[in-house]
Image (cartoon, rainbow, N blue to C red; front, side, top):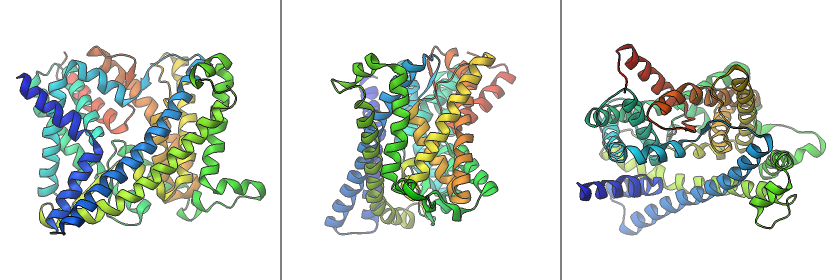
Length: 428
């Protein structure tokens, strides 16, 4: 059993959980099925992986800057509560149910391929880490309902397979408006928020009033350059957090950098990370989309790759930053509201608020311009605060504490299934 466990852990946690490898394998298969020359197969596969890694490097840089901001914000404003972060919950769950989570993920991905082959849901979910997060959430959910390992694996794999195929379809009508074509889908389990964002945008504004087309007067026109706008807007947030936290706390993070210079450098690092993300996305999309033609033609007709949320950032980089700011402010308001009414206090974590809130704004912008971007990101900021607060008791029921999933799809699916289970008297 230990050998099987080791092999399974290698396949799931070391191989398939690496999104770059998964995307590269898909590109490799697609190019081989198209009978491309060996040089083209190697070049296309390597460039797909490298492009994906480039945007991963950008994501890491951006997350590093946001983590420092989060530390200063928490210390400066003296807030305590639950941090909604999928990586943290999954890490805790893997210490309790490693084999179950692994099997749910592997079997669920296999089922995703079968569903894409034999149903109208032609989406192949390639964001490996998000499938791992969903496998962890489903394992936690069914353990909270008293399922044994076998029942959890079977039920969890079925739900993951269908979720991977169906959730991207939910946001695809609006994804087409974002990208202008039907070649890729969104592979990020916040599609309820993204679909809602597209719908809300269509109700309040016009696509012609895009954040990317805003005409700013006088010196404000410098904000038209998104690198400048990102640096200045994030810099303001950083200085507020740094001043609130105080010199000692900033210097504890800065590694010898002056406490008033450190926020500026972090804001610049964040902007650089965002630029790298956009560059990497453009590179790997130019390879993965043509390669997917081979898979569509030979194995899964009309299939589409469902890719991680930063794939939409190049379509509206200004909306991305605006979305983070609006979503984060909404999360702060929710934090104080929850504290006032005695609910579980959800501290807005900058990393998911940037990626989820920024993506929501891109969807809102595609249908309703800047008004849609603002409304969509505010609504999403509220959703990713309320969902974790409602699901946190489920986390606690299996011995997990201090963190929860921010993803809207996880929380909607989890709350529905958990409450149905309780109606039938299922408890751990």
